[in-house]
Length: 429
Image (tube, rainbow, N blue to C red; front, top):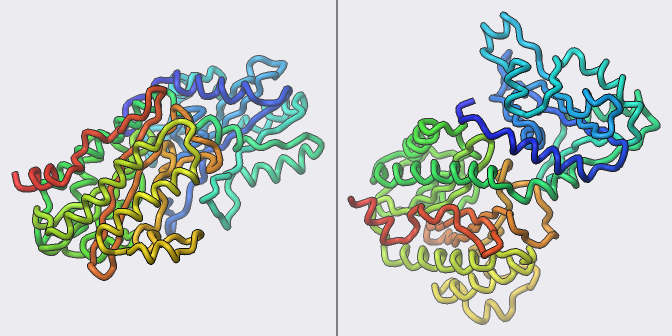
């Protein structure tokens, strides 16, 4: 891995919290992600299952975790299974975890090769009454091909039909959303790398550069600082491209007079940052661009104040909508008549600000969390406001990452330039 070793206390703590809420006589099974074919004999770069990493720290394919806190044989209360390496694999694919290395990373003492999984599972599973399987219940997720956990579930139901099958996902949804100190530090590192990449790009941007050249600058800084890479496909959207919310072509030339919308974040040790900024290609905003920019920034700052423990998701977004409506009226994009006759289910401001203001952030960029549970201490959320004006070929988006604490919230990106004057100053230094 490019990133530095993560303190194994994180994974010991996470497993302890998970097993503490299992029903008595329960066994839980977690799988690493599948490897996905790219073409011919190639596969896409492996990305670990977030829940598996959360519980083990193991960043390797073909791995399985068993948790059985009530197992009568204490050897098998926590068991990690790994793909057995060989001289052939070492030559063609490189280093894989040894058993001792896996113990050091995960804090799990019982580590076996994957070839022993079926025999060990069969020797203990009949002492359990409940089998917890970890299906993907992120409400943004959809699939056509059954993934590894689902395939295992089908197999187990045939072999052990009278056990009671349970869902691990509701437990993980409550645990993962509250970040521990180690997780917060890893997220801060991702944010710091993202900051340095942004400042690097500010000094690079000028009329005539291509969006992909800017993306290359970002990628260079990410990898130089041990990030795994991008947390998601980066958006480098100049001019009219910025009104496309998920523009990722990044293949156009940046022209004098346009604004570039950046939306990128570093991934470090599987934890993610998610930042948006908008900057003038020439190094100076026009009067109109600055008016829109300042309106977006004002809404973002007001919205940030609302991200506190106890806030309710829908109420929070409704309140941000009211603030945005006021700013859009001030910009001449809406008038009071538009607001008076608006459909409450599709308020007028949605014409220019059509996405949500916040999402949870963590091991997934859109992290696994409930939409219906009030915000809690330990949550990290984005605060992401924008105004998109097709008729002006102008899109402005600003986004920072906010940690909720007992004393209020902390902006983890407070040191990343965002004030319009500061942006212009850096670009013209």
